[in-house]
Image (spheres, rainbow, N blue to C red):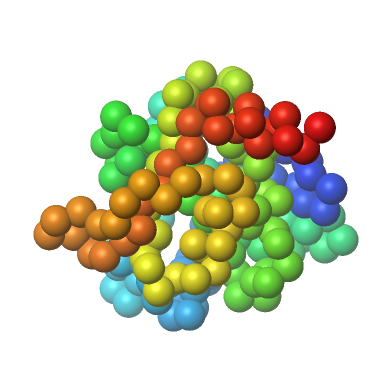
Length: 179
């Protein structure tokens, strides 16, 4: 079972099948998924994709977490993921997706911080990565705000992206600068 986390303003807990409808609704907002390829406009494929992502074990300490504001604990704000890169690994990617109602409030960066700590200190990862569409300026800002480093652009034959990475050493530097 994945751990739950609490931040100053958020509850971050493992995603379950009880979250299916909320996640499906978020993905159906074309503004939310416009930079993310997926089966968003094919209901049967979208539902099968989401069900598989919720029910499949992704490895010890890996998975999806749902975000809820403490002031509205029943209001689904989005999710954070820590999963094998491209679904197969060996690298592990971190990602986030928020409902439009949660945009611009700093929730993504706040919710991702305990997941990063978990990735390095509990799971024992050496590095996490994120590929972000270069037009998704909000997600690029989140990656930089949480301390990820831009390491390159795109992969041949793939959708355009900016590639980011963070190591445990990067996290230690960030934490020591806060102290």
